[in-house]
Image (tube, rainbow, N blue to C red; front, side, top):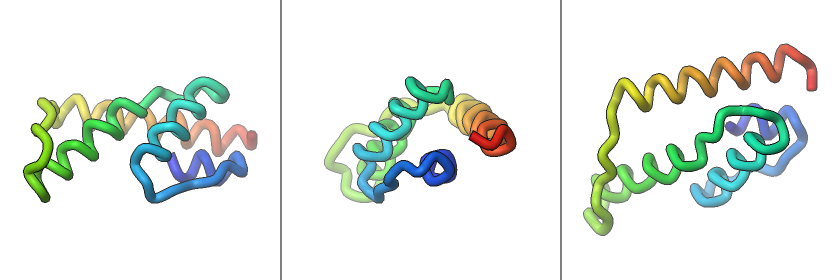
Length: 83
């Protein structure tokens, strides 16, 4: 997500909710897969493991890997297209 945002001149952030907003915007404006929900789930998984203050989401490793692969391929195509 950061590479696509940087390529398009968008601001990047270290805050998960801003990353999710940027991902949603990249989906809407540039047709990248919408990974905003995945980013929220991954952050919840991190917080559940680190702090135990939220319930861990039910993540499927193959599903997560597939979503990431689809997104990486879409970003690669965006970068190759010279947008």
